[in-house]
Length: 465
Image (cartoon, rainbow, N blue to C red; front, side, top):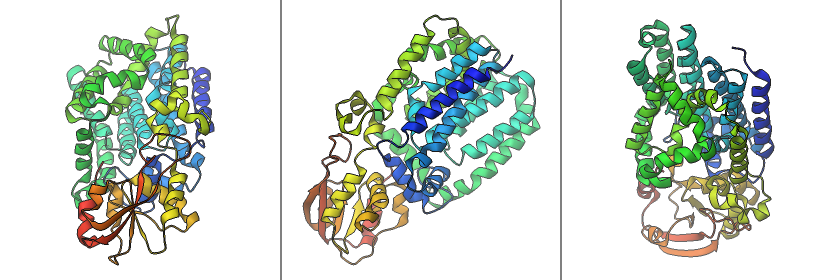
């Protein structure tokens, strides 16, 4: 079956151009600000993730376009890989194009392709593994299985989630075949490469008490977006409600063909993430196989272009920064797009802190977004780096025990009066564009009269979320 390079690359390039053109709008996401700070302290790992994304974020400097470019490139690669999976499953040029479009318009992936976050790289790694496994089933070239190990070795430097996908594929192979895959020596050679690549990160986790497990428990306990009850409905939202028939058709087609293993893998992941309280978007890497299979059904539908058009317009209009910042508060994106709201207001927050700062004060950030904003923008105001007990920032240590006044935000008064005798509001955060995000309207506290030295207080401030 020929590869439909022209239409597939056209879809990939258009998507990449859109993402890159929009990458400099609004501002940093709170996660990106955090990655810049912890990545400036190179380590084999961090309590919430492996090292690769933070290290790159720290190296990218102050350019949002440069920071986010790898995400756009990864998104483009995912488009092409999904089309290639469709080809391996017998899809012609039209089915390959449909599969490419299914990836390109997906809401959850568009957000990942816009921001520098681990998710998009993790999903592309799952997609690459899917392509290698699918091709192996067709041609039985064992070098492809070694490739699975190499892709996994890289993916483990971004997220540990690919381990769940590999477990799901193993279950699929055991239940549906081809079981001959499990007897191939190069499969285990690839596994050895992946294990060796993971050892430094596992060593860091073990040395620090396995904080990644605590992070998993914190995610499950928080139960955002409906928690376990919302997990299945969010699959429709994440993949695009109007294009969901593609992957649903793919599940049916895969069950009837030689790639039934992907149906079992999907079911395994759904059950595991439901039980463990995983985030709904953890499933995204399982969909390329379903899109590729479903594309051969949907390619015959007359309404397929309407489906893609509706989801593409919805994705861009609700999740990407296309509106002028001054009018963003009045748009659907401000109401629906959490990630868009969290890219607004960081310079204004830093300026508000600078108004109440005096030389010698300590700045304590209640979350890593605030700490990252002070790090990125505070130099222009002569602000020192902020301290924080949130995630990886806690490991950077506390301030000196000199009794200096402390600027704290965000925080509640009841929290602060446990640790300081004099707690007063000195200012308030206002982003100036009326965006209702987590920082807007928060008081800026000045705390004096410490009740505990930092050495005793610091362990109490440790927080994973």
